Image (cartoon, rainbow, N blue to C red; front, side, top):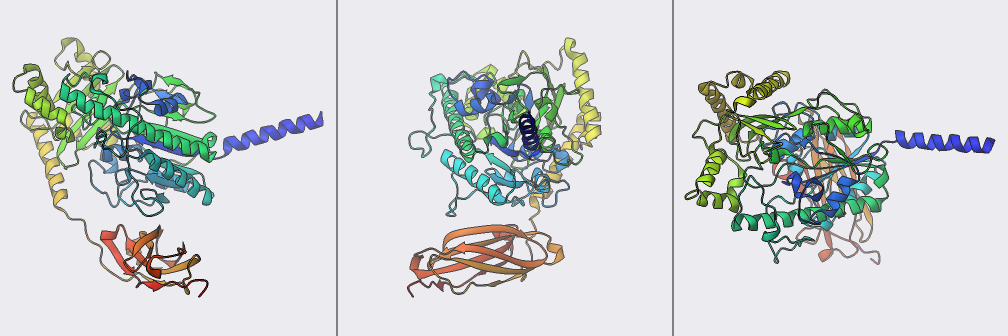
Length: 594
């Protein structure tokens, strides 16, 4: 009886300890993939996405999840800041060197996590390089990982998990798959063949496009790239399983926005922002469950992750939905607000949107009847085909005009018309709900201090809209002209070479640094090279601040090229902006028999 009670107590203690332990976090994103491009979200192509579907079914998936922005860098910075673009300062594709907020990286490090990333590295943080504990964009031999090769994603994942174990910390690992972002799969000559090659006659043609041989051919390459993205996700999950950490790891999966074709990417339409969001939280989420009640969005991801791991969270625009993952209901999730400001070429085309499960309202401040919307999808074969057909086809000409110029306001019944083909902004029977959406947007602008507020308060005034947009364009133009300041070259470190340097041994390379307070924290990279021409063997990176000594251990090759090695060291945000660079001469290597 006593033994039985003791065993029960021990079991309870072990169970409580497991619950209290910090779970690992693995974030997997795919690039430029519409939600309905995978099976679990309605893709009719059989077995297009077995690994993504398996992951989605293993946890809780959201039917009504949206990202905030239809393009990459501003969208990803919303995800990992918990702030809307006008509050995190990353409204386009440019570096924000002194952000006012803490990124997910900072908050997870404060909570005791080892943070690492592979892929989309410069697009996932306000500036680059950001102080992750590790960046796995290069292999151990120093060569660049191929962001279209599944095995490289598996290898990087395994290295991230191993590095966290060596640091004796739980991991927060972000792995960003490049597919199905362009360039798409390119056919038989492509080095990275997907598991499934989709034929043009097999593709579903989205309603926002048009059925045409050229369009089908481009869609076939896109869906083949979706299959390759699935292969990459499979390699990531295989490495997680092999590590033995699967049952201790929260997995978050989503796409950053819709497919890179007209009326999807670089827009705020339904298919631009609808994302296949799924989260597997061992012990909390139930397998193969679907949430059809709540609307969640990318701005909610950071506060949700912080609550899952029990970390402190600053005041954010987003709101945690961790309770929903536990099966509870959450109030005030009837709509999401979306925001677009700028494309990668720094063209300012401000848009705001409010979406419910049934309706989508868009306010296009930039639209004045003549201005052309700047979007990356004009480079696609589908766009060029649309432009050619518009010369003789009245319907496609109307679609092209809408694509290029839009109108100041749009309103769609996305339940009946998810492709956003029929603008109901003038519909008498919808005026009440349209006004409700306008009021929701106005209140959101006030609450979040949106710089478009004054413009929207006078949205009926074309001159007021144009004045706002011109001001925004001037700001973007001035920023484009500004060259980032180059750091002043100065001596901030000295090095102490290991002696002797013997083949097949480990040596310690010492960097004595003394950084002025004004430089704050800086990156440091130290590279071991071999041969008289300096072929890279190994690179180690870190962060330094103030005064101190950094000791780095390297393994000298057993038979170095030309019998020589050398070391290179630089300090700064990146090599081209280094504060100091030093490369040793080629050093003869001793051999044990010497």
